[in-house]
Length: 499
Image (cartoon, rainbow, N blue to C red):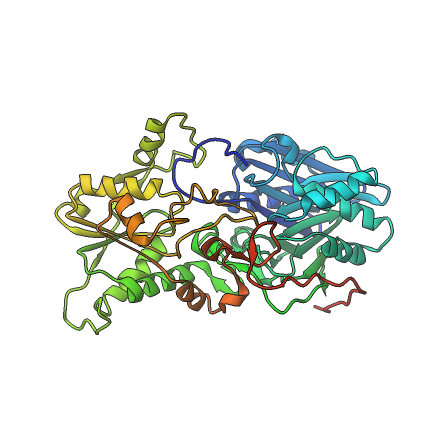
């Protein structure tokens, strides 16, 4: 997919955020609107809400940020106490409004709305089969393929069995918020690649990509939706039912959710993202600590890493010995972020692209001048940002600039909902760490090991999706290696988990 414009930085981009609510009496539109604001970091291309008032479905989907996509009249038109919402950054499908979500369809068995976070790897195959059966598609996105497959199954099956049949047909990464008439459902793929959680509100229940959205609604996190699980919210907001539709031996949680995408105040797969990042920073010091005067983060996602790194550096020396009375390192903010330069700032020329980092970040000279500095960042993708940051800090007077990265080298693209660039664009795809260090101009460069990531997440490598750092994927991807055999789910009668 060609990028819509050139990013102002070097960040990977995540596809989407989803939310669904079922309330006892009050309208769902405004809580959904607030929840989408809490998930805005997961997508800035479009935003949408679909509600149901018990008789008919209402929807509003528009390109742009949440605050631009809705006005007061839009929210007032979205009547009903159940609904789903979506924020999108496109990594599959067109950039126009046709692929904006939630995707809505009306059919013989009622109305259907669907919000999707992730990417299918067999979407084209599913689309071709459905098109041959007479289904007409209005977009080229994988979400519409899921919606049509589910709608077809609902003609012959009850809701739970229809969802399970669709789960047996689609293959890849997905967390879904679905609305069938006035019933809201949440579904997570059998490997749990993308996050989805369940929360309780004062007058109902909520499903969301991250717990921060539940916090925004003054709710309480109940738990993560389990891989392969269906959660059905009762239309009156009085309860929910769960069904473990597919069970697999291994998960494939995306480690990059904790490294970069998720808000630090979110709990994902039982781990607070902020504490995971601090632990990753501590591991980074233990593996590759370097004694410098100052440790400083690249804002904002590097901040928790740098905090953990600095804490560990003040406890032990770079050789792993207790520091005792020996002076430690200073943790300081050495880069100021311009928060009014968005992620989609368009720069048509190379000179403007090189100027982008200076628009977003400016060094604080008093922090770095005449000092040795360690810069902590979450990842290096293309290398553009890292090169310019090192140059900025050196121009501000730093004597040495060392770069420490809170993730392993990214050597391969992601096919499961992250716009991570092609192999040709990835700086680490065909270069050694020393070659990258020379390219970015740092005095030293070290990445975090894969084993350290697994340790910080209290997980085994086999239960994580590490495709972008190993080149071996947990799902069957054409022309790519897989890290294990993929067991297709077997379609059989659903059983209630009885929550």
